Length: 120
Image 1 (cartoon, helix red, strand yellow):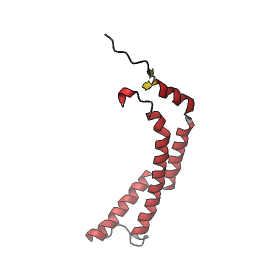
Image 2 (tube, one colour):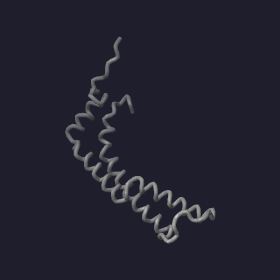
Image 3 (cartoon, one colour):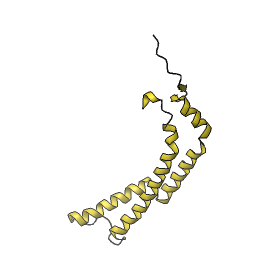
Image 4 (cartoon, helix red, strand yellow):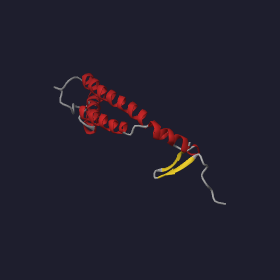
């Protein structure tokens, strides 16, 4: 006997999907929203200097913290702003990134709802 998919599923170029969810998706999903998510990410990363800058700021805070906690010689110039000001600035960048993550998640949720019932 050959296994066949129940009629509630469709085979697409990108895998099997729930037929009813696909119909809703095609009727209501605005694909340009995905491009706006990409644009928003680009702006967010540009505002914070990119992912490398975010990583570098975390490493700076680590080095500064090591001086405070372990008493190691300062690895970050001490004429820079205070550790709390550096952390506050980074926190604002991370808040922007968090906002982007929440909006991106909302945009891609309809795509995840295409999963056939047997995959959930």
